[in-house]
Image (cartoon, rainbow, N blue to C red; front, top):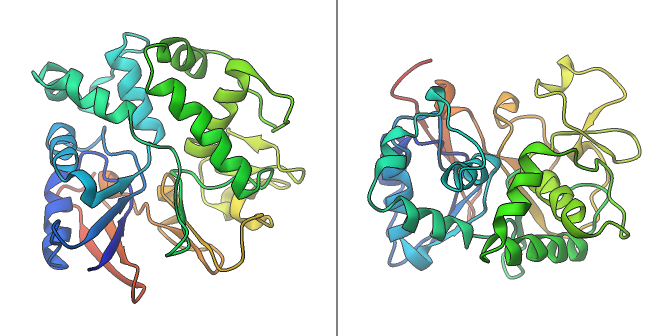
Length: 273
């Protein structure tokens, strides 16, 4: 039994299947971890969602910001753009079923045996693991309920606090948690999130630093797996922090990490952009 971790798929179905074939992935025996952003930009978001959903308990995934945007499109909170390549998915007869399945996926995965922590964007230095788990569960409870609409409305269109406080409450607290778990890249020296920059660290002005440059308050021996940040190209993170988004949907490659021996595998994009 092997544990495979894959970065942002973004609708790149052919690359996903080719990569899984390279490692001889067997759903009946192996476990597949996914960093989120299953959809948009690539050509086959519908096929990706159907395939991952049908894998059932063989998959452990987290939601990314693009997955949340898809849920917002379904709920008529936001409108899809042509570059997102969602038309086929939105017209599918199982669109509602797929969105319901997405709404019931977590924002944070923790395996205490393998000592793996996964979220789409990472773990903010203003949290410890217990706070991260608590905040993720608070969001998941609302997102999977019938009252998720106001949460996504606020997340998409209202100002969100950029700094954590235990005194945050209501939708502001939930929206900060989503921002930290799905959109975060850079922080100020006090740990406050800065959402303006997406480039590589060497092209970003000081005093901003990547979230993983700060001390992260997690138990000793645990590793953090994240996606979201294609411009890093999987490089420049400290030991035991693994960035797996290598920009397949931008013409890069889809990356897989086999956990047992920490060996990387990759599949170049079939279509360059």
